[in-house]
Image (cartoon, rainbow, N blue to C red; front, side, top):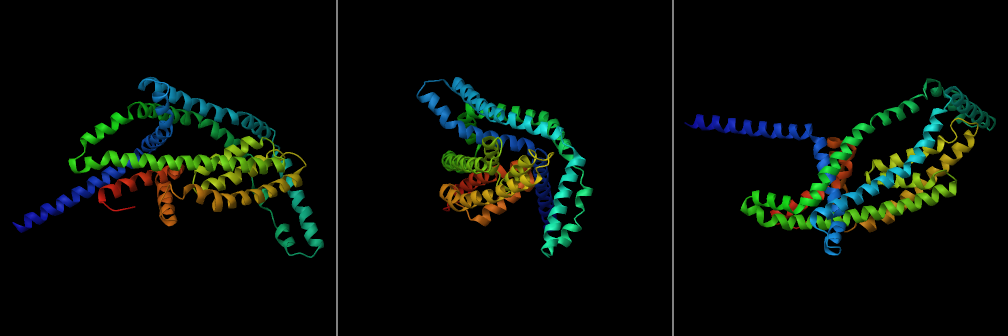
Length: 353
């Protein structure tokens, strides 16, 4: 009898583990859909004040307010994307005119000049530069190929964008209805705290997104000033794009500085102005470092001090884990999603955050 009970317990444990494993495997397989839903929830939350304003002040009904909010989101997206079109066209022209052999020759001549300078001054860096042959192995044709790859992915991005807009519309229109249906399906002991938890999540995430918006605007202003002083073409567009990339924790600033450097170099890449190009890239690195110091020590602590109440190590582990599971999008949604889960946990555990 005891043996039968033990066997049943073991089988039950194995089946439970298999069920959990199958569920996790299913989540990983549909991670793209989960990301779409998460992004849509974020967009719906961000548009919530605008939708409420339309209903309360302009007396729009729910359907018309939802359509207007989605249309407002589309206008913002079109304006943002349209701002980058001149930059994309200009950079595409620069890359299409790229002369690989001339580029290699220009850079190698620069290295020779630098080597001779250090050699005449008996500096040890000469040995390093004189053996610097990595350029001969670089195929600069990868740059146009990269551009073609990005263009080929536009179709996939378009499908994802339409999916997100479709889901966002129904979250805006039927958000309260969805929450009430979920609440009705929950057990009684969970049901009591569910809507209260959702309300707390909305407040915290609203603060977080306001903070992100202020951070992006501050970085846009600082980057614009920096690039304008250095004399970079399309300074405002580049500044906005690089500021926007800062919504990606840790990786965003790295992508920004690389992007700034690349967009600067493409303006000089097929000319004899290599020295001017390198000097501007150097100024960009210096200016970018100053802006990041301002962001890390002044802007971020002030903005996020009350929005996300978590230890920095805790946040780091959450962001990295989310990035491993869901990629770049995972890095972006990590903090909002973790904040929501944390509120739910403390609501039902009875503990204080």
